[in-house]
Image (cartoon, rainbow, N blue to C red; front, side, top):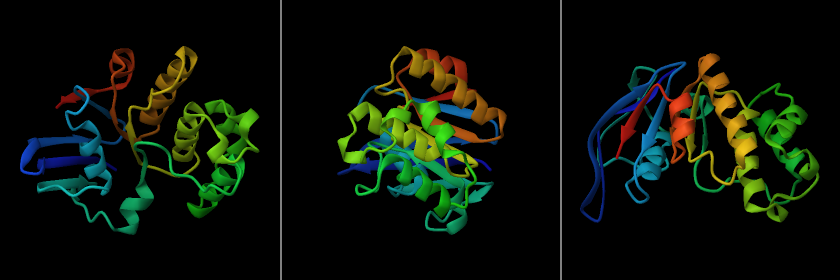
Length: 201
């Protein structure tokens, strides 16, 4: 399934953030959203997943105009925007198992924990994690559920060199499996390795 925007416009208090913006990430493609801090990258991604509403234009999903409240849309799109949401009173591993169960996923939660480097924190409560660990939990939350679209806001944040190398490999694997990826990033190496094309705000 694909995701993008058609002739999208958004403003804050009458001040344009972006206007006339159009692009689509098709299955197996990655689009990187580039721009300085404050240019509207996060806002655009929030519009893509329905957390913000465009002033005009369309969010395009699977070839048509999307209803952001539709179950099919929510089931298809995994996203990490800003800080990760989590269930504060269950452990990290229980949080991921619950997410997997809610989405009918058969993902190997232990393997995902190992992949994102959280095995040692599996029994901690999410509020006790460091900011970097919470970011990894957000990434893990995307990877334990089914998805045909992946939307990530600066996924390289708080990752060390090894973590960024892993992230490049993971996003390439997502593309290879047919997932459409849209991500905002300041990491030029990540963009060059993963993106099929870029959108600059």
